[in-house]
Image 1 (cartoon, rainbow, N blue to C red):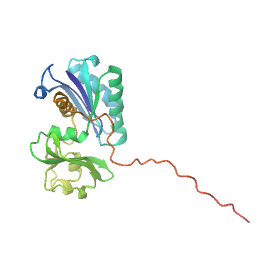
Image 2: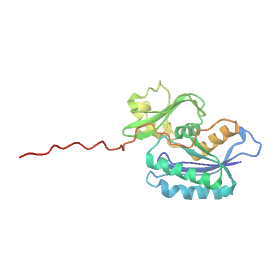
Image 3: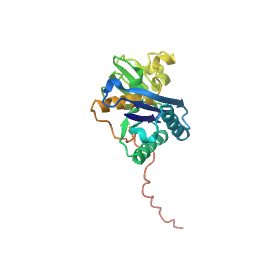
Length: 231
């Protein structure tokens, strides 16, 4: 079984083909091909070629894909929507199921950590998206958005781009980038996590964006009444 995975909710544009043999269990999942690049301004330009390249490297065509998994954020609106729109369009065209995976879960899974930690990504506006994990595969609470100084780390290590941006608040003062890796999600981790959960009979999230803020745009209020000027 082949699963195509990709994520555009961060500056990283990442795609992968993950597979498991027919009748295989979660332990048989592996990545057949993967591609990642970091460019916050070119999600729309880079994603389609990345998907084409990983399919070619895996020796597969679109018709071989049985499932699609896409990162649902949280993340900036424009980049996030590129991945979701592509995933939904491909799934509809191929007639295959489309699943959502929180982007921070992919960051956490890629870390391979076996003990508790926190994953954090850049939420802009001097804030971070963050969540706690018991291990690389197990999130223990909801994803939140806060200012770095407001995140109660409880002394746990913090990984991800958010931690690297605010090391004094989230990283114990360390400025070594390696201490916070992986900084961004990888589609390899996202796809393997999704495929393992599918093979284990677990339900995955729908492919809907995970927004944690109210939109900046709002419907205009009624115009103010202007009194008539009298001489």
